[in-house]
Length: 398
Image (tube, rainbow, N blue to C red; front, side, top):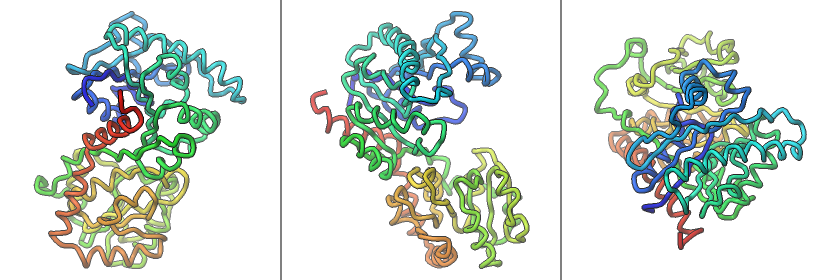
């Protein structure tokens, strides 16, 4: 798809401190299309609460001093900071009343977007909405795009904040959008319940840093740990990870060393894992260091606990593991089905030790190469191509 005008709205600002799928997608869109990336409008409570964050302080300065709020990022991409504050309304207990307040918020938000679109001479534009089910609920009606796309990348209904009103509103927004794009097959299938024009478009992942040939030195704190190393990199949160799996892996094979890299929640901090001599907590590391730590793993694991938060999420860390060629054992979920030919999938915690043994025994240079090649196919370019194909399916004359 080329030479189109695309307006992007979502849950992450372009200057987000943590990055976002939406930012990567917008960047990819802009290679062949004009893109207006709309940073979300703050409500009064959140801007007060987050005022000391650098990107929020920037927004406050733009509004208070009436500074330029439409910034060109590259030849085809502009980022826009709406000059409005929305009302804090999620406390409203009843969805019918919430709808009225939300309509007013949407009116303010859309008015700002239309100003920016007019400045850029955007006319027959496509609207791409990254899960912004409240602030952007009425944008299809207010902006009147030639095509509206709702993008789902997380099961938002697993979070109480979104579930309160979103259980009704997200389904309605999906239904009235021209199509829904999802980054996992699980989320695609959920979306199909509300919109038959729902498509799996994969997940992009920049794995360029996870290249084993570029690793010059293994960090000292992991280099001193004997092999075989069974490792995990990521947040150590009990909402997402199964403590029992990790404990079983470590206790059933004391000759293995289990290395866990990432910040711990209270459940992990207080767990019996800290009493096991072959479990090593190395703490939070800089992102640039992670490939060097991963290079030391003999087997990588993703011991997800199965719940409504994890079951449908695309596990980006699997791409990073595979890009380094690492044998990987993970909990079987619907979202993991696309990795089944290159990973070992455990149906329950009891299967983990045997699958790790198998992964250690079967590893080879050829398998490492196949894993890496597979992970490198999960690019933002390929994901956006799938979005274009979905648009062409629903709107062939666009």
